Image 1 (cartoon, rainbow, N blue to C red):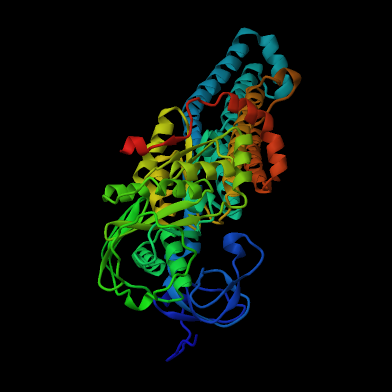
Image 2: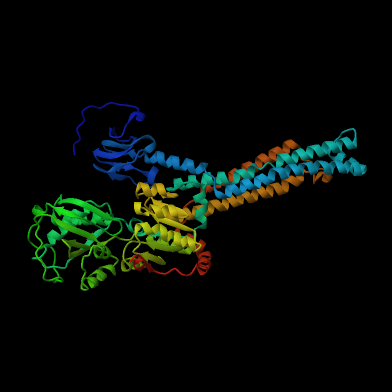
Length: 598
């Protein structure tokens, strides 16, 4: 494609506005998020996706600001600039996450609230104890004073020692280590997550991830690839009643107005089968989320060639009047329930055919024209290659897995069995996903929801931790607490493992700060003065600084975190996972909500 350029000039990157066309030369960084208008090149997207291999982008493809054009000259139309770009949003998410407080930090704040006045009281007690020693036993006081001081009078030396000891107690027990234990670990943990392609929006989701007991997966686009394809077409009427071409043309035309992956699959299949680039005209379009679409279709005359294009099956609905391609038609495309709600008769002979496809994990979409059921399309969406391994890894970590889908129970069961998911809920409309998550929470479970679509957003918000696939919709990403930049389900396991590792590090930091104070405060108070060891205030201050430095260094060790091999992870969580599964709540069983809805 040749894109005309009327003028070309060099400007500051801050002056680029949406709609501007930017020329990107080989070796240069792409300055904005945009769409390639002309050219083809290999793009290094490793800084965003973490993948070392470059990807090929050509006219019509989207590019991300900050990635590198390795070869070829590109003309890119700016879609997002400045703070709206993907890279800027990632930076903002990381900054917000690092600045937020984890719930465990509030515990540290409460401890510090009691710790500070307690240390002041302890310092006063230290002073009074040493003064009491000076006044009650001059011999002991003189001996201790000779060990620690060369003053002219024993009483004066002991008072001086008492004052210095109390000051040392104040210096060595500064609660800085307690205050640094959590935020430093959260900052490093979220940074490590970002490096691995996992954006965690704050300390609270980072901590909550370790408490997760149930992981709920959306099916389409999350467990499956999200690019379904039509695998078959079955007509219920004779060719003389309604041609296959007419049925396909009607279905494809209707689905042009739908953004659902199944609708896109139907449109692509129809265009390929009919060998056409465009379809008919639509009006009065109406989409019922999770069920189907309907509208009035016209302009099909040129698409219809009166000849069969697919292998036909016997007529199941005899005695129907012929459906002509001319004029307009009322067309419905959707589920069996959608047809019933629109008073479309479904004969019993249709159900065995539908079940045949459903048992093979294929979704059945029915086609009705002018109030009569004429055929169906079977659509399959392949399971992601790592879905089974992810579910197995989560199970070995002691987590319960659940799948939510709007598909019928047979298709849902086939997918769940293939993925190894323990329980599933079928016929779940988008509006009911959040209610189902709430129901799981009511049973005492801490729930993580993994999804990618607009219809998953309410459930992502309702869940204790919402996890969005980075290739999903903007609304889902905005609603989630954790965003997986790469379309890699294994990052769900990594996110939970990183959370557990980070919280363990926080606990270790707390333990170190506590032990440090338990050892340091008695020494600063003068417990070793009888042995000739007296901690001066400047020494106590240095020791306090070292405690803070040691906590920071402990947190920085999180930077050594790496994704573990799946076999190592299974070994690490195997025994614990088996024990937790024995304690898993009962009552989870495959369930269809159709009866509740009806």
